[in-house]
Length: 465
Ligand code: BES
Ligand code: MN
Ligand code: MN
Figure (cartoon, rainbow, N blue to C red):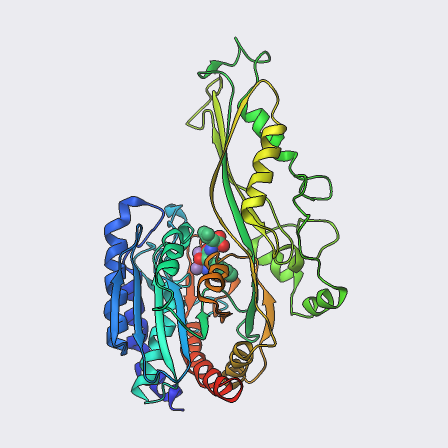
């Protein structure tokens, strides 16, 4: 294949096009950016057309539009459905960015001596999604597209993919495919390609604790009425025991138990604890007793406070007992845990541990199921062979701690399996200030993807069809 040549000749344009896409602030969490979200959907449409899709449409949904594109070359050949998202996380806190989040710059870093693009969405997921658009261009231009392709690029992933479920339900025929291909995860390192074989589920809730009906003078009332922040802190602290086990009754009932053999295999993945600590500036790791760091952030469920607020947080000191305290809490779940069930368990437990002196409200936000991919499938083999062709070695299967809740629904509505070929690195700072994506990773992704198509089509035609 003539892929490497094509990339070398066109790499500056590939970078420039991504930079243009990154300039549009498609923040799905903030309704103030609705116009920019729509502009980004349009830009994705134009790019899919330019890459060679025959039919591209902006599909309206109850929420943000989904961009659908296709190139059908022969009904008897298999179809790859590419999924990605054009929406991004809010860039906050802005003051911690070294350059404006929507004004992309290319800087060298220790890990990326070839340079990395710094912008919100550079890696998650505009950069990784766009690799697929460029890979399609290459395959079409080289006359080497071996199968049919469909693209489904959504704009609500970062807020729970609410409209996508609706879209899947109503477009099952249009979206029919033989495999779903996603680049929205990471790889172990530039030297160690990996295929993500698991994603965690998620239950996200908000809690409110209320005591007096107004803020009170903390001298006149202090000591005699419940302080909602004190109470909320204590309730939250009680959700873990001394072994960092979650204390919600029934929480672990359905957690998948891995065999010793599987755990041994996991432990073979390259991991350096000192590096890990240094990268994120922690003095020690922390987590559930009896599990390694890699297990804690992949095969074990968690409960974390994402934000907590209430009372006076302005300049100086104000003596006050606040009326209310709030927290946002996420629980990462593992296969077999049902997110709705876990949300109910949380609600029941949280309400039950509240003292009589306060009122408690638990409001569920969104959630989703975890996912594990088989590794004895033709799609896994195809991905592995593709990495082999480009990196000269097999990929390491790795369960990720992150969530892409829609993946389990792909199986439900489209009856197809998903392959997660990620090219990001943990150090890319997704969701954080100074998010970036290595130019090397971007171009390697573009180079690897066409090999997936080639191997998948071949294996597909050889095996079942
Ligand atoms: N791309 C991420 C998920 C991810 C990143 C998985 C790296 C594995 C490795 C995705 O955009 C994301 O951020 N998902 C959210 C869930 C969503 C419901 C807000 C997450 O994991 O917090
Ligand atoms: Mn993502
Ligand atoms: Mn994300």
